[in-house]
Amino acid sequence: MTSSQKATLTPPTFELKPYLLDRQSQVEAALDAALPMAYPEHIYESMRYSLLAGGKRLRPILTIASCELLGGNSQMAMATACAMEMIHTMSLIHDDLPAMDNDDYRRGKLTNHKVYGEDMAILAGDGLLAYAFEYMARATTGVPIDRILQAVIHLAKASGAGGLVGGQVVDLQSEGKPDVTLETLAYIHAHKTGALLESCVVCGGIIAGGAPVDLQRLSQYAQNIGLAFQIIDDILDITATSEELGKSAGKDLQAEKATYPKLLGMEESQRRAQELVSTAKDSLNVYGAAAQPLQALADFITTRRN
Ligand code: GRG
Image: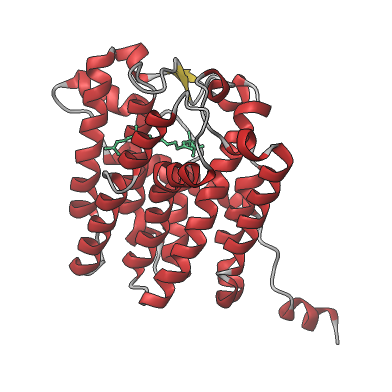
């Protein structure tokens, strides 16, 4: 076999770094355009402050990657991808409030309430929550309306009491309790962090017109990376510095939170995260090389430092 024949048979190795940089800049531009300044300026400034504060943009990138896996394109998925980041950002603004996790820093900058006050921070979160749905329903183009409706329903469910809100409630109720079980912790993680990640991946698939079996595989992938993501988050809270995290490190210990490292130890937590990522990747093997971006994103979850 000649070397050129070999080259055509071996799938090219996927380079995550340039892929991430390219997608991040597309998402930054789309978010900036999605939320222009308007009257009353103060609230728009506060919403834009947090929405455009950086971050890995993992959720919108996952949305676009899933859409592409099932034959869609980034244009079709972009409004939904932006909506995902709006919901994520609103949850961070509210999570940072004194009544919740009480943090002064997020994404390396002062938290929203530290700059705009608690009243505006609550309203900025509310504004982003409502606008996410308006924007995804209004600005999605080239996608049949029934798919958009299905995605809106999926995201609304993931954001509410059966998803993010429910996870945050059980998390708050569990603070300071010495007897939180692994089962409760899994519930917190699956809802507080996993539900939105799953919605990103599944909605990307819905927008592309994926069949139920495809959406099922994507959901499996996402549930596994969702839990792995939060286990790594728990580990980083102990091992990374505040500078690396862009927020205060060591908060979980301080708040006496149940975490994977606390319940299982550091080594076992790391092993579980790795195992979950491996299972997540396997659930997409059926798509061959087309699954490389989502599989590489799964690996990124365990190697990240923030
Ligand atoms: C959705 C109505 C509604 C309310 C929100 C406050 C709240 C209820 C939920 C808290 C959700 C929360 C803060 C979960 C933590 C998720 C998490 C691990 C965030 C960090 O995500 P990264 O690392 O952050 O992707 P960047 O900054 O990179 O985007």
